Amino acid sequence: MTELFEPVDAWDRRLVLTATGRLADLNRLGVLTAADVHVATRLGQIGGEPSPDVLLAVALTVRAVRQGSVCLDLATAGDLVAAMLPAGDVIAWLPPGDWQAAVAASPLTGQALRLEGSLLYLDRYWQEEGAVVADLLARVTRTAPAVDQERLGAALARLFPGAPYDEQRDAARDSVRRWTTVLTGGPGTGKTTTLSRLLAVLAATTDAPLRVALAAPTGKAAARLTQALRQAVQAADFPANDRASVEELTASTLHRLLGVRPDSGTRFRHHRGNRLPHDVVVVDETSMVSLTLMARLLEAVRPDARLLLVGDADQLASVEAGAVLQDVVRGFAGRPDSPLSELRTSHRFGDEIGALAAAVRDGDADLAWQLLRAGSDAVELVDPADEHRIRELVEPPALELRARAHDGDAPGALACLQAHRLLCAHREGPFGVAGWNERVEHWLQDSEGRDWFPAHYAGQPLIVNANDYGLKLWNGDTGVVVGDDDGERSALFDDGGRGRTLSLARLSDVTTAHALTVHRSQGSQFRHVTVLLPEDASMLLTRELFYTALTRGQERVRVIGTEQAVRAAVGRQALRATGLARRLQHARAADGAADGGGRAAEA
Image 1: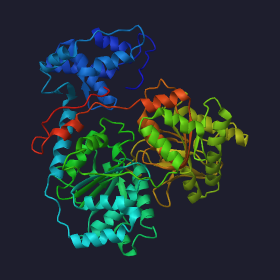
Image 2: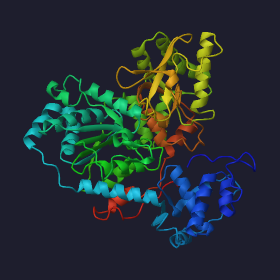
Image 3: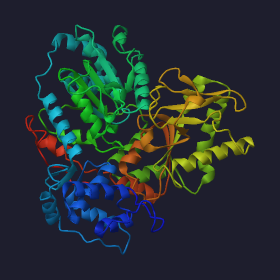
Image 4: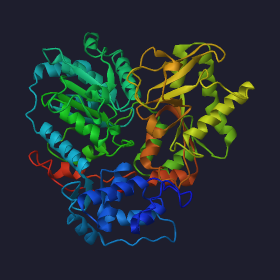
């Protein structure tokens, strides 16, 4: 759970003045928002459910979904909420068994609500989770695709030559023999290398031309996938005759692939009755895919098309409900029909960044702190009070970006965008991107002896906050303002190639991006990153967030934080309540959609 809100006064718009009992108490204490309470009370009115215990469960379930969980675990919700309350505030809870019985007897259950053991779902998410289970199990139990073993052996030997490719060759061989593959591994383990060569193997073992779709959850991740694949096929040992099948492929966002509908934010033009035409569908950065989007994807892919889900299961999950990649990895672990292929050997990082990321991923706070304290050319610990050192790290890359952009050097400006980024956990407050973007701008003004910049100034990094279908800009796309502050300026967006120039007047929802939240940095890589850790009490400070931030850096990582913040980050996991992993573990293909169960996690 994230931080509570603090009502300003008794008339704060976030308070529901008509609420009573525990709904009112938790709303007053900032646990439940007005929306949580209103949804619960309205459902109770529609369904004829007056019980305050059931309505409390509904409100907490709505909150759980808003915080990223798919459901609410009634067995642990009371303890989790009680632990969040300020000292001296106590909320009386029903015993979990009695609470579960009250919900089970409610007229809402079986309609708007679904109860699986102690897990309480809103009906939509129960349906979507069941659909994901059923579709995945149907795919992995389907008769394997026919493969010419002689052609496969020759292609594997040609595209994965020698011992350095042993792990990746095995993953590719398994993938060719399946309809569904979940390819996981940390940064630098060769997921893109494996993918590029696997696609060439598939083309070499198929007589007809393959229709391949590449997709990612965000525009930035899609652009990076396109760029990474083109770089991968230029490797010296990539056979020239196999390049044509891969090098012209272009990735899109998942929403664009599925076909956006103007009348719905959760339904698409491609679905179970109108499948995607592609023979191979690849989704990169799958950890960022929500439960809803995964359900829409699986129903749109043809049963006889190969599906490759690629990602790092240890990274942050989607900002929306679900932790699909983590759950799929857990759910299929040990199953004989498992579609998992894991890459373990990192080829990107030096020993220092790789060791630090591994310590954080494994929950070893002592080792993580030891590595940070020791420092190296690749890893540096910075005291949050040392503003001089922080400025030394953050200002020079911003100055170089400004100089390149002012001179109209488009390739140089795009390269500078990938050179450094300041990553924060929060959007607002002293540790948030809004304040740090302003601070960087003040430093730039100070270095030039100025006291203001125009609304869009040369070297201003931009990030798109909402899809713009007219301009074909997508949430998460990044760019930079180029030109003279006193003359003509335009926006140059990174499209994975030479960039795309647009008029500033046509941009609708973009913000400055000297600093990014860690969530928004997913799908990106920077040569250097500076990671600003908030205070240790921040509930956003988790192991997954810290690991994701560290692994955005390719050559150098600087961590601004205290020992308490580092230990809190490593020790706190971002668990989400979901039943997907257990349903995959125990379901059969025929009853996957109906099987219940789940894991206890944070509400």
